[in-house]
Image (cartoon, rainbow, N blue to C red; front, side):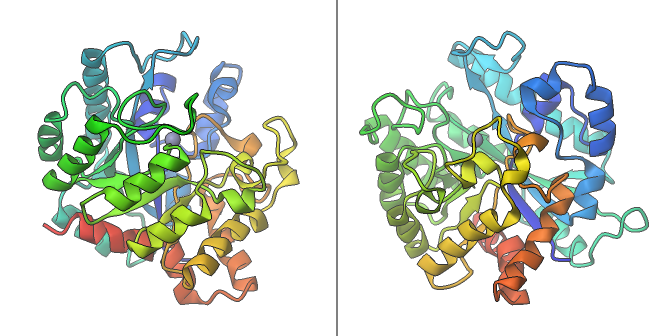
Length: 366
Ligand SMILES: [Zn+2]
């Protein structure tokens, strides 16, 4: 079973808003949340430490995700109205990751340096064999949406804190146009370009997820840093309808040109436009996910530019993932689906971890 890197999980948000404890198994979390409002608000859990071990998910990007105060979700304790609150919440999320790793170092470990990255990659060269042999799961920080950043100069401090990945927007309203924005023709403004320039200067890689099509293309072309990628989205042309949250073929080509990677979300409503969020999940299978994988590979002419950024537990759960998946552990089943399509072991290893690993080694070059 190949080692798997997942480039997008909102672990801290879930720990703080829903009290999820990722040291628990998925079954434990589901049992605890039975008859609570959590499954309705965030779906039935897909992620737990045991399932990560079983699925060889040894390295994940853990987001600092906070939401702008626009929704009526009174239970959402990670919403910000102003930039000081945003800063406070971001720091709370860093502390949540640190606490998890400090309390259970045999289960989770922070990856903020080249050496720490090397340690996790080394560990997972030997597959986990739960419960006999397990390894700590590495967590790399990424800020999902920097709209609440008090000052651009704060990036220097964030870099010192170990942040090396950042996606400028989530909901939009600052820097550039977002996928959920009202005006989809909006591109980068002056502050947005300044942000990209500063990110490159201090050594923070660029995640273009959540940008609208215009902004995404501008960001890929302009960003002066070395590593640019999309952590969690899907291909618009495979999806079968126009949706700004997805990546166009044009931007896939531009990312490939820059040696970037497209991270796919295995959620049915990202994979197929004919899936409604209340449809039965068995309407969609892993072959749909493989369609997206294959599309990026065909566009790129190789398997070097596609990977996974599941976003599991990020506002959705069991009811909207392909029918073969009961938890994150079952992502390993994608390997067989790809094998049946003619992908060899090397291709699958690239897609499961090699491509993210290539980018992470550049990001953590020093
Ligand atoms: Zn997201």
